[in-house]
Figure 1: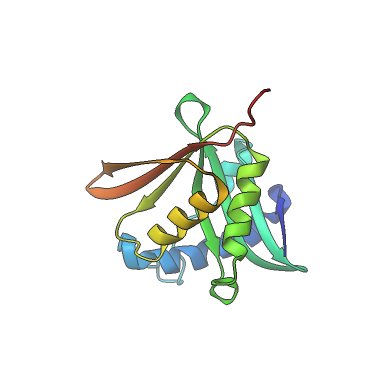
Figure 2: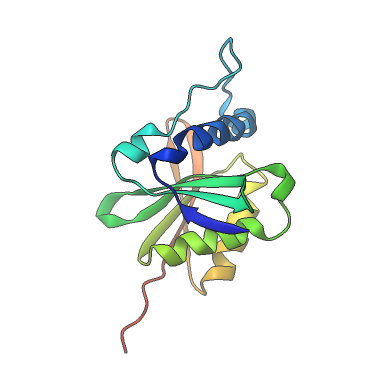
Length: 158
């Protein structure tokens, strides 16, 4: 398994993965596909604004993706994170998350929808396995409750 940042040439691949992701998330976000079976969520703004897009590959086969954004005060966020079900529960998602955090040292916030029951323990475990200390807060956005995991992985200067 390898993880790499991709450019716009991989946009069709990432958009296909985004449709699978939205299928999984439709349970929690209450969205349905259009008449063609698509959810209409595409990644082009990430490529147009040079936001990092990563893909997990098993050889030459895609296994998942992650979209990174920079929020307030240059805090990095994982905007979307997805692993195809075939690759779940093998430690790959934790490796993928750690790879992202190592590629972007600094302040991080991971937002997890409270109702996404499998994701909440995953992210708590992934963050606590990666770093000794993190802070958890809660926020409500448009009526949805989110758990926010905050940490800093900036190397200390000796």
